[in-house]
Each structure stands twice: as C-alpha cells, then as structure tokens.
Image 1: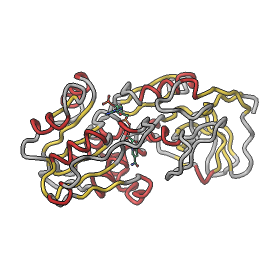
Image 2 (image 1 turned 90 degrees about the vertical axis):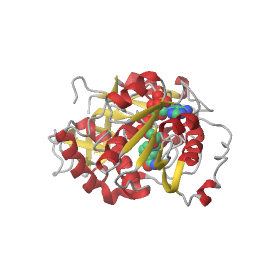
Image 3 (image 1 turned 135 degrees about the vertical axis):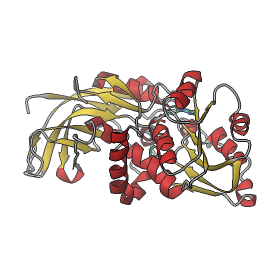
Image 4 (image 1 turned 180 degrees about the vertical axis):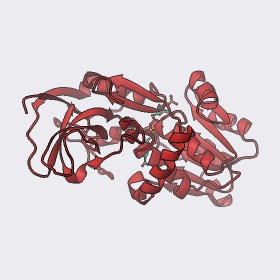
Length: 339
Ligand code: NDP
C-alpha cells in the first residue's frame, strides 16, 4: 500500500522506571494483504500495565517484546484492505498487534466486533480484556456473595472501576476502593459507585481500611500488591477470598519485593489467595459480554476513559498510566473522531 505506517518500537529494556528513550517511533511500509490476511487502520490502541513486564527479558505467560521491533497490545480499527472474504473492507475488528497505525494481521487473530452494542473503543475496556478481568476475578477467582464487603485497589483504573460495578451486580453490600489522591477518592464515591474511598497517598492503607471496615472485609480484588495486599490480609474476615490480579506497585522494582508480613493470617483465618490471568477465563467471555451489554444499556456499567491522541503520544500515555495519569481505561486514539 502507498500509505506509510508509524510503529512504536522498544529501543532498550527499561531499567526500573521506563523513560521515553527506551522507545522509538519508526516509519515502515504497509504491506498488501495476502489471502487470509487483512490490513487494519488502528483507530484505538491500548496501553496496559502488563506491557511493562513484557519489556523485561524474562520468561512469563506472554513472550517478552523484542528489541527494535514494534511492541504488541490490544487495538481496534477498521479493515482497509482484505484478503479474507468474511472480513470485508470497513469491518470493525479487535486484534493484538497494536502500538502502530496500521497492522497486517492473520484472520486467525482478528475478531470482528459489533460496534452497534457500544463504541468500538469499548472492546479495549468495559467489553474487552479489563472488563472480563474484573468479572472473572469476582465471579470465579474470589467469588462475591450477596451481602459481602469488598475492597478493590487500583479502584479508579480500567479494571478497578468495572470491578466495583461487577461486585455490586453480584450482590456486594459495600464496596471500598483505594486510589491515589483526593480527586480520585472523591470520584470513586460520587461517580463510580463505591460506598467508601481510601486515598492511599494520604495515610497508611491498613489504618484507613480498618476505619472504613471495622468489621472486616470478605473479598479483596488486588491490583496493586505491596502494602495494599498486606493491609487487606490484615482486614480479612474468616474464609475471606483474595483475587491476586496485579501488583502494579512492584512492576518497576529491580529487586524482588518482600512478601506480606502477615501471611500466617491466611492459615488462622482460612483465607484463599488465588492468582489469575484473564486468558484462563475465556469461557466466561460470552456470558460477560451479554451481561455487560445489558449493563451498558441500563447505565449500570458507566466507566470513564482517559484519552491521549496520536501515535507520537502513545509512549507518554503508557508512562502516565504507571503514575496514575488515567482515570478508567487509558486509550490512545489514532483516528480523529473515532468512537
Ligand atoms: P489501571 O487503569 O488501573 O492503571 C494503573 C493504575 O495503577 C494507575 O492509574 C494508578 O492509579 C495505579 N498505580 C500506579 N502505581 C501505583 C502504586 N505504587 N500504588 C498503587 N497504585 C498505583 O490499569 P488496569 O486496570 O489495566 O490494570 C490494573 C491491574 O490489573 C494492574 O496491576 C494490571 O497488571 C492488572 N491486570 C491483570 C490482569 C490479569 O489477567 N491478571 C489483566 C488486566 C490487568 P492511582 O492514581 O490510583 O495510583
């Protein structure tokens, strides 16, 4: 194709905190699709905390990003050239080769999405991976039961905001969220459906959690790890359940972080702590999308997004995400006016 592509490459493996010079924007040709391939103009690309792990040269559940090659991640866009009869030009699709303006992708890795249910960008947020993560965590990993008190860290982020909505739908009586700063704490209660909020920067999480839940909590959805996990273990009621979803407070660590000091409480209080990866819960996807589509229609899954514009700002969006620049899903919009 005559059009040029701009892609974000990993130029160096970050040592601790990533910096702008760890990344490079490279211009490349957009190939013509062969049979079985499509070319997608990416309207939206996702930046996510898990990408930080993939920048390290370590073995994990997904391969490390290669140096001097485009990074990968969720993207939704419009098919602009097609070698697949069932995916015509103009179709809206979701795929996993983001971080670039145009993607050549095999049909096996493309999902055509219904942009009538919700704006296409929702497939990177409430109808997509963050939504299913929240649902799987609270439906299956640390199940919420009617009447439960639930604590969620990273509460104002993509997964956290949806987790609160899901917890309420599953019957939670009280949901307490923790986020950084007074403005996010205010919005947790006034806009995102939380009953109580902790500003973790304002004081010790354990003390604030005890003040908010003097009788303890039944379920903890952990997005943060570290002091949040230790505080939650300390506040768990007997037979409490913890979904270990993420540990963003430790992703830039260069040395192994110490574990929670109070883990013996898991024995005496008969707690369950279970780590999970959303890919292992794909069997819940249809059930979740059907529920979420209804909740979007009735307004009970309203979630915020934070948008940065243009491939030139994608790295800033990612770096900002690691510092809480986002409320709700952090998205990069590559096409003017995309929904
Ligand atoms: P978010 O939208 O929540 O963005 C990250 C947020 O982390 C920031 O907004 C910031 O919010 C918070 N944060 C950053 N540093 C710290 C810190 N030191 N202490 C406390 N909070 C911090 O991202 P996602 O919703 O996409 O992801 C949330 C978590 O879920 C991540 O840990 C991620 O890795 C994990 N995850 C796991 C999946 C799985 O399959 N297990 C799938 C998807 C996500 P604030 O301003 O409040 O500090």
